[in-house]
Length: 48
Image 1 (cartoon, rainbow, N blue to C red):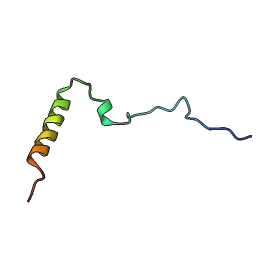
Image 2 (image 1 turned 30 degrees about the horizontal axis):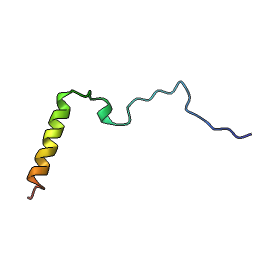
Image 3 (image 1 turned 90 degrees about the horizontal axis):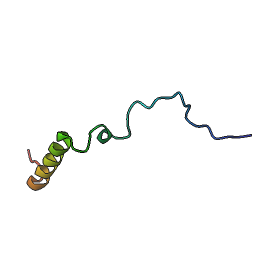
Image 4 (image 1 turned 90 degrees about the vertical axis):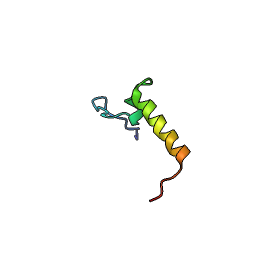
């Protein structure tokens, strides 16, 4: 008889799915990320 194998309950997940899961909603890093994103959008692509 075939059955579906699941994840063992002893297995530990070391990292969340995304790095954003580590950063709280009101953290300064989110503000800096949004500011840099907007600066890049306004200025456009960099030329060398």
